[in-house]
Length: 283
Ligand code: NDP
Image (cartoon, rainbow, N blue to C red; front, side):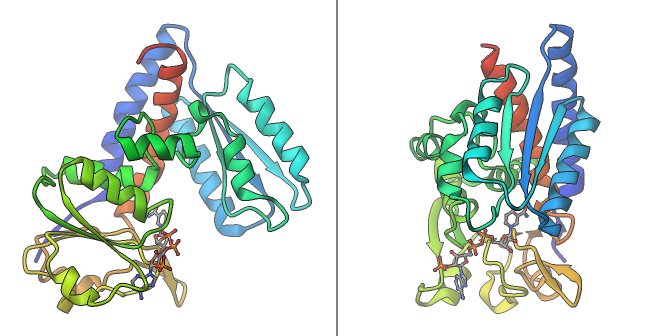
């Protein structure tokens, strides 16, 4: 049986660290503030936003929520972002995706000040990640790296395979593993011999969005398996990895729920703190 990498424990440690730093900043008269914008009534988005707000409150981060109606125009949303870009008490701005289809997601992301872009989706921040000169990392891949580091799992020289090439998970995940000197292979829906490639992985990251996609025959004995997937089957949460059989072969594995999920919010809190420090010339 493999070691279960517990995202609840590791995210609690990250949040504790953030909370202590927020207290120190407050003592210097510096507050930390996050603005979260949500447009429309998507139930999953509402849950994510509520969780972000709760995390802010627990860590002493001021949170402002802007719940806009489904019919909000592009001009109205851009005007709000502009206002928040200029607000000294807001250090981080997050626009919950997906946006309703009449809004241009790319334009909205590009209008957030890169210094306040705590999701690290702005092209300036994406470029910085590419060249390894970054202060924000997208929250989910950053959470995975934090888990590996917390567990003392060395990336250098390892064969790392990431299944998925999305802009928010797969691609930045690849870059972060590469920056840590992993030998990285990125796989996607057109990849040939996926099973063979995965079987060669010392560290296998699944970010596919398909329940139980990774089976035991795709995993090398003793591999570290990170399951980013969040899927719902018959109302029950499950990941991209067939946990029961893969956990018998892996040396360490993240569960779903309770694995990468809790890390994402913790890293958002960390990014908001980093933004406040950067904007106050403390880093
Ligand atoms: P996307 O749908 O954007 O990307 C999925 C990727 O998987 C694509 O690159 C796609 O390839 C690839 N893929 C799909 N089918 C196959 C296949 N048969 N073989 C190989 N590759 C395949 O999803 P996201 O990256 O946004 O999210 C991935 C998962 O992670 C989802 O379950 C999501 O809910 C979860 N997630 C979890 C988070 C957390 O906090 N834990 C945060 C963000 C996401 P192609 O590019 O060729 O289409």
